[in-house]
Structure formats: structure tokens, C-alpha cells
Amino acid sequence: MFGTMKRGANAYANIGVETGVIAASPHKLISMLFDGALVSIAMAKKYMSAGDIKNKGESITKAILIIDNGLRASLNKNVGGEIALNLDALYEYMSRRLFTANTSNDLQILDEIHGLLDEIRGAWEQINPDGYSGAAQNINADTSNPSYAKA
Image (cartoon, rainbow, N blue to C red):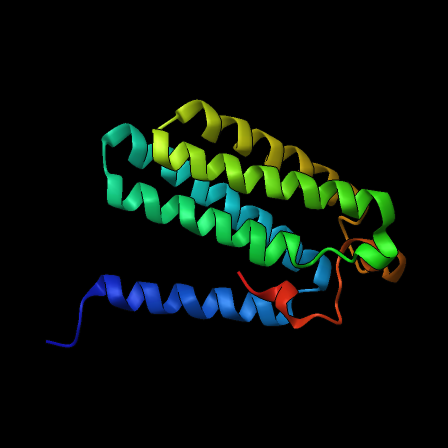
């Protein structure tokens, strides 16, 4: 009559995510992008194992979009130098590999990319786990580009 409990729970969760994004530092936003990509890949593995082609494809596509339009777009190549260029190449590699995993139903590729992202996320957290530091942030995220916050 008034909607489902699931719809209400989803609306509540979306508000929580939106509030988290609004209140997050640029460093935290990048962490959230890593988390989103990792969850998407984990879900893709689940769907691939279950033979759910539609949801597998959607999850892999979401991971690719987060990597390309979030993580890659947030790189500040002018300040980040070689590190930013290397990350850009690695993110491009990850996107290509995820596409291959999707077309060939290859769980090993999903494991590979999940491991790479998890390792980079761990390094990112070591840079600035507790607060905002302008110097570290300027190397790793282009805050003048509003697309860095899109997932």
C-alpha cells in the first residue's frame, strides 16, 4: 500500500551515501571510489559464478566506470608526475582486463583486478588515513576537476 520495505531501505541508504559524499574530504572520496569498484568486482564474481550474465555485466560495467570516470579522471597528471602517469596506465589496463573478463567469463581476471585495486587502495589509505593534507591531495586528485567526485 505505501511501498515496500526494501524501497524505503534503499532510499535511506542512498541518503546516507549522498550525505557521506557531501561531507567527505577529497581523500575520502577517492577511498569511496576504490570501495565502490571493489564491491562491484566482488558482485561480478558472485554473478559470474552463478551464471547471471545480466548482473555480471552490469557489475563489471560499473567497476569500469568507477575506474575510468572516477579514479582515472581524478589523477592530477600536472602535479603527480610519473606516479600519476603510471597510475593512469594501470587504470587503463584494469579497464581493458575487466572488459576481457566480462566477454570471456574469466574469474581469474576479476581476482587479478580486485587484488590490484585492493593493493592501491591500501597504499592510498597510508598516504593520509586521518585527515586532509593539501600537499598529498594535490598529487593524487585534481580537485579543480568536478568529475573526480563522480562514480
